[in-house]
Length: 229
Image 1: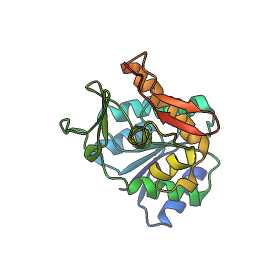
Image 2 (image 1 turned 120 degrees about the vertical axis):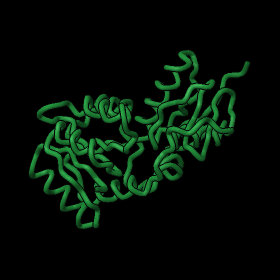
Image 3 (image 1 turned 90 degrees about the horizontal axis):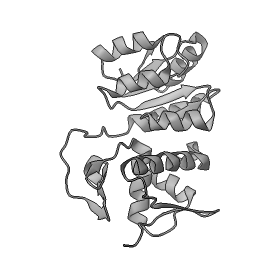
């Protein structure tokens, strides 16, 4: 199984299954959260497509349970398009967020992008990396530590923060960030970068409440600048 689709609407599930199977992507359909957990207990997919409004369990609660035992990439596929829901989904460990209605071609492209992702090596010990005043970037395991604390960063959050740290103190436009971090940047929008930046800032301040190293430059982009001693 490459993809586990968790979706209660048969018409939407049929559209997703057809779009993915047309691209030779094997997909298994779970109609609710209980069925999804049963599948995950016996199989290991490379990607989970997850609706939020399931009949038996909220998608946000379901991703919490998934993250207790697995780091499988999770992409929310939902009609809930508000910024609050998108930020919440990313904060809870989702790797991407796609809203309905969706283009089957765009959906297939985003799924293929995630399937190409190398699995993170989450159980490896810290290794030497690029040190930026408390931030240590370990490229081979795609991890970032802040003052010795491992940051919980899915694919895009890691990519954005690592890129900003590497480019510090240069200003990086949203276009450059997407070009560097996204495999298919044309499939995303500038606002996606802003949403991820907001989540990253929150995770930094969960570790160091007064630390604000990501600077917004109006109409230009973002830079990474640590405060001077």
